[in-house]
Image (cartoon, rainbow, N blue to C red; front, side, top):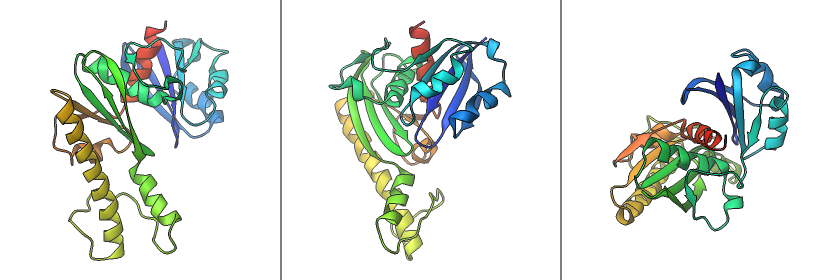
Length: 243
C-alpha cells in the first residue's frame, strides 16, 4: 500500500509513491489531464491508501478532484497540523513547498539548526531551529529565471542555459560573460547568505534541494547536503501527521 504525494511546482507536476517512508516511484507530468493515466501505468488506484496535494501554481483543488473518486485526498493549506512550529508572520501566504522542505529537513535531521536552500524557478532560504521552530526566510530569482530575465528584458542578450562546466572569474566573450555573471553571481549570493546564517546559528546544517541543488552543493564549502526530494519527503510527513 502506498501514500501518494502530488507536488505541483512552477514548471511541472510531480507524483511520488511512498512505501514505508521511502520513495518507490516518481512520475513527472505537465498537465492535470495526464495525472491519472500516468499514475495508472505504475500502480492500481486501490493500492493507494491516502494522498496529499500541494501546489504553488495551479489550483490544488483541481488536482485533488482527479483522485478523490479513488482514495482520500488532503489538500495542503495553512490549517493543517504540522510537526513544526511556524513563527512566520503570515502563515497563510507561506508557500507549501517551503513548509514541506523544512518539515522534511527536520524529519531527516532532528534537533539541528537547519538552513534549507531550495533552488528552482526561485531560490528560497528557510531557517528552522533545533527546537523545531520555523522562523522565516528569503526569496530570490533562481538560475534559469536569471537567464530568462536578461534575455527578455534586454535587446540583444541571447537566451542561454546553465553551464555547470563554466569556470573562471570573468568571460572573454558575451556567452562567457553572461554565463559566468549569472552563475558566479548566484554562487556569491548563496555563499554570503550561508555565511550570515552560520554566524547566527550554532552548528548550522545547510541542505540544498530543488532542481539545481547539486549545482550549489559542489560550489558551497560548508556543512551541507543535497536532498533533491526534500519537499516530497516533507509532504509525506505532513500527510502522516494528519491521518
